[in-house]
Picture: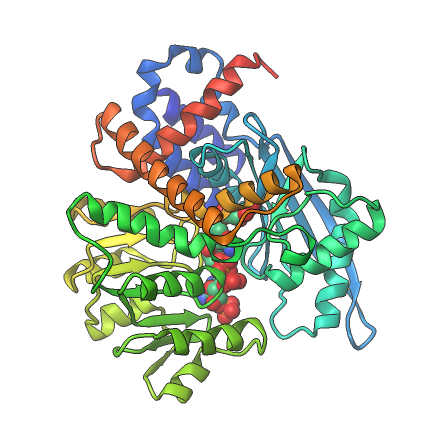
Length: 451
Ligand SMILES: NC(=O)C1=CN([C@@H]2O[C@H](COP(=O)(O)OP(=O)(O)OC[C@H]3O[C@@H](n4cnc5c(N)ncnc54)[C@H](OP(=O)(O)O)[C@@H]3O)[C@@H](O)[C@H]2O)C=CC1
Ligand SMILES: O=C(O)CCC(=O)C(=O)O
C-alpha cells in the first residue's frame, strides 16, 4: 500500500463518521501522490500523516437565552489545524448542519488555501450549529456573546484569528468583536471582516467573490478567452454570491441565477447593478428570501432547486459557473448537464461545492475547473491584508487593496499551473493547488523537527 493510501486508510478507521472531512482528505492526499517519490524526507518525518490530524479541536457548549426567556444550548467548535506557517486563520460558520466533520474539512482545506496566498497564515475553522435565520438581532447578539465567552481564551492576534463564513457576516462579527473587547479590554486584531470603523479593511466584504471572478479570468486567459459577454450561473445569494455577481457585471458578463436554501431565480435578461442593490438590501438588512426577487422582477422561481438542478432540468445554457453556496452542491449528474449545456469554466466561491465524481467529469471534459482552495482564496487573502494593516496601524485605500487582491489571485493561478506541470499533471488546477499549498507547509513542518 502506498504511503498516501496508508494514511487514508487510517483516517477512514479513526474518523469514520466524518464524511466531509474524509472526502476533503481523499481529494488532497491523493493529489499529493506525485510528491512522495520526490520527498523521501517528508515520508520519513510522517508529514502526510501529521498534516491530516488537527493540532487541537476545541468543543464547547454555548448556552444563551432566547427572546421568550428560554435557555438554549448550542455546540461551539474551533479546530486549530496547523500553524506551521502563521497564526491559525479561518472563518466561523453558524448553520444547523455544523458538526465536527464539517469544521474539520473546512479547517483542513484552509491549511492549503492560506499557504497559496503566500501570506503567513495557518489553517483553522470554527462555528456552531446555531441557526441565525429567523432569530431577532437581540438573540443573535446574545448567542455571539455566549460564543465569545469561551472562544476568547483560544484566540489572539499571533495565535488564532477567526473571521466570517456561512451565517457569520458583518452583524455577527460586530457582536463577537464587541464582546471580546469588553471582556479582554484589548483592541487587538483577533478577528477579520471587522467593520471599517473598528479596524476592518476595505474590499474584505467583496474579496471572496471578486477573487473567484479574477481567478476565472486568469483561467479563461489560458484559452485566450475573457469574462466579458459570457453568461454565468451563480449559486447562493450571500456574501460570496453577491460580490461575484457585482464583479461579473463590472467585467461585462451576464449573471443569470441566484439561490438560497428555498430555491433559485433565473433572470435570463441578466442581473443588473440595480437588481443586485435590491438583493443586497433584501439579504443583508431585511433578511428575506430570494423568491422575493422573482416576484419583484417578474422572473421564474424554481422552488427547492439549485441552479445546477435548473440547468439539468430546463437545459439552461451557461458559459461559466460560480458555485458560491455550500459543499457538495454540484453532483455528477449536474456536472454532466452543465457540460452538455455549454459550461466550460467553473470557479468555486464555496468550499468543496463539487463532489469528487463531479470533479472527475469536469477534468475529463477539459472544463477549466478552479477548486475552492485556489479560486476563493481572495477572502482569506484580504483578511491577511486586514491583519497587516492592523499591525501597521494604518489603512490602505480601496484601490490599493484591490490591486493587491488581483496580484494575489494571479499569483495563485500561476503557482497552480507551475506545480501541476512540475508534478506531471499540466493544467490540472486540483493537483496544482494541492501540491503548491502543501509544499510550503510541509517544508516548515520538516524544519521544526518532530513537534
Ligand atoms: N465569506 C467568505 O469570505 C468566504 C466564504 N467561503 C465559502 O463560500 C460559501 C458561501 O459563504 P458566504 O457567502 O460567506 O455565506 P452566506 O451565509 O453569506 O451565504 C450562504 C448562501 O448559501 C445558501 N446556502 C447555505 N447552505 C445551503 C444549503 N445547505 N442549501 C442551499 N443553500 C444554502 C444560503 O441560503 P440560506 O440563507 O437560505 O441559508 C445563502 O444564500 C461557503 O461554502 C463558504 O465556506 C469561502 C471563502 C471565504
Ligand atoms: O477570512 C478568513 O479568515 C477566512 C475565510 C474563510 O473562512 C475561508 O476562506 O473559507
